[in-house]
Length: 195
Image (cartoon, rainbow, N blue to C red; front, side):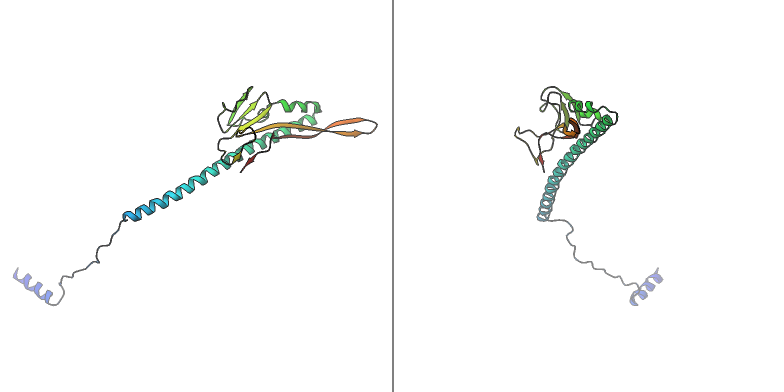
């Protein structure tokens, strides 16, 4: 044991076993102060408010696009039906199309189609839905998100569509003028402003 102590002293004298003290810098603060936390919360709240406002705007734009897509599909179905009547020589039956429910021309009813109603069903139909008014012969879309929609004179947030069939008279040589189909359209009853 004495030999070990002597050996250690020798090594310590030569600096081999000298204990080294490592000094660390003073401890730094790693968390947030209360003021910094309040600032971060306020910034996040403002950004979230802007995001939710924009999100509502995009949802409304998506609703408008979905409504217009359904209307375009019905318009295409009307054109196909008119063409089929003309090809088969049943031109006189085209006039009956303005009394039919245009949703029946589609392969599938739209997911937001509420059905047919004889009376004014604006208050009874869920917002964001289509319904066919059997009295007016109109397909009506009741708007759900209409912050940017300007209602008409009736103050209702809806868009009413109707089948419009127009004829013009073509002069015939040596006979009375003939009534010829000039347009078959599925269009809003009144112009609307949405955005």
